[in-house]
Length: 366
Image (cartoon, rainbow, N blue to C red):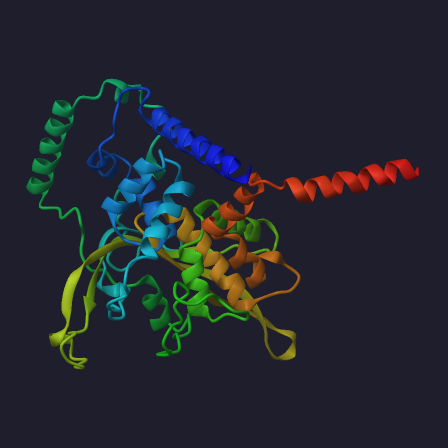
């Protein structure tokens, strides 16, 4: 009888998988991986960030397989990532080397190098564009050609260039303290599970790969009153960072002997948090602490929220859940959270029946 049950279950599962494929194909249209890669930039950036794997093509494949479901796509990409060998560690990346596409500051109107709006939905009307229903590739290519010609005529480099950091301007005035250099090797949370208390390198890794909505929600909670923070964005920048690895054939640490392997597009945020400091004779002065956020692609809201939580976890405060590293770090991981919630769909027949029996006995006892 057990064999029959297993066999029947296998057939049911196979039919369920067939039905899943039918749901993806039933409208008789197929999205190509290239189309997803070209037209779903925001979703691809989110999936890459939460998966800790920078590959637009792999992210597009996972999105197609997961039918646009971010949770399923991240699960697929994380699973694939776990099968890949770790052959090299890249050299330390300096964000000052970023080729900037977008750069703004909410703290200063005029900043060294100027503000560059770049591409953003912040300045759109947020109205549904019904013209997209009948959008044609010919019209899109014609518009693209005109835009590129106008850009060439203005001699305006769309991808910008290297720009100074806004916080360096504040440091030069002594308004923000210099960061202490820390060359301690960071811990890799993808190779070893975190243990509490954590180091900042671990917290930043978990935050940057955290589920976008969860990171945003907890950052919002910190703003609303769980810690009563109100930071100001000192600088938000988006651009490409060059990645180098050491020469695998020798142990030389010479920059000239490294290999350029490509670049990654990231969002970086540095927020300024005003902190009242008590001085002598009851005087209080304001000082600025810094929260830091960085994630793959263009995901500004998540990066800002990450910088808020970075500060919260760095300071720590037992009164607020947003300052509790165990609460925050264990609840923002999309795969962990999705897996634990989803396990409730698995059979719980035995445990539930035991609870029913207990209720029945209690009722009879009444």
